[in-house]
Length: 561
Image (tube, rainbow, N blue to C red; front, side, top):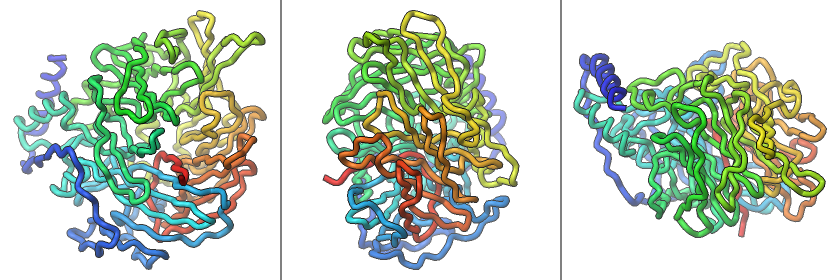
């Protein structure tokens, strides 16, 4: 490790010693967040031509000037990959169609939405500062709002007009060799890692709503009604660590997540009970491959087990230390280290199965369940995911320049619903196959959701983003039928839909009885909220936004109480 650090320091020194110096920013480690701008506050003046503004809360969409036109290939009007033009907005939307009266509550969607600071543009989709969008449904009406999450990283960037924390592919520029050494020390302590909670948002069993990213410090509590940033979610245990899975499993009673161990390669499986901030260890999985744990952006569970994936796309300490991004950013592809799936008993913490599987790459697991024989004994665990055919270059396809420069060529890597079968009889190998013919969904597959009542249980339907080729990003909404092995696809040509989120109708007995919510960035530079019938997958309502919003990642449902 020491030689790794020294070689990285030397390479950085010789590549940067002749650069022009800029004063490094100072970051105050605030434990409490200041209250964000009140709803009645007047529109803020633009400090620079690319700064964000704040508009008054409105009851109807006000006239809003479009952002300055920028030309990015053939998609110059597509707002999915452009920074949000305002820091906040709220108002009632005009609805075309009919919103079901039973749909009462709030859909929250989180994601990167601001990809520049001053005149500096970020590289990667995952770098952007978090933009939280709220869709509140009540009595057939829809109120939309959005605002930036007030993380320390966002506030420091605004104050200093430059990057101050390490993001997914971005590193603050050091003005000297000594300041670089100081940044390395902050990296090892976690002080320089971002708290930009731009990945997901979850409602805990006690009602608290937390925005998340892969750094543990990037767990931020927000108010689901006002979208105010309340403050950091402080874990009360002594488990430490710097990173965790960006997608915990959250139910009314518990919060499950994985903590990768970069020093002694493995994963801690931890549980946090409802109403507490204390994570307790269920058990530990040691990696069977190396030299580091595989990336665990998400993981699945069944009724009795936690499934821990070990992907050959592994964390890379050397890439973490570099001042410029490596081809796979914080990761490295190690096919010779092989791939594994581990199954841990929730009750005992014991590993009950650990099998080698074919190489795979996935960001998102869909669901898992237990396969049983006639006597009720578990014979296998089935785990489904959005699998990218073991092609790690999908990370490069998410560089903003690539997303903004679509020229009509089909450059989206193929993907499928990958189905793992993990035998529970001690066999050393598991299998990975497509759960249905990938052409059913255009060989594109990501951003999935299911009926939450079927979490960890045998299920039939999943909702995801698929593809109509040619494309450079998933561009359809897809309903997957895992029994009939068919897919229904929705398309608004030239547009980019975000994650289709399923909300079950109260009292429903059918798995697909509910609605699917998505937000669309259309080809004309505008956007709208979309509701599809969960069963027929036909449109039932849409509501146009006052202006187009950037692409978002993941959401949650907060029912009205």
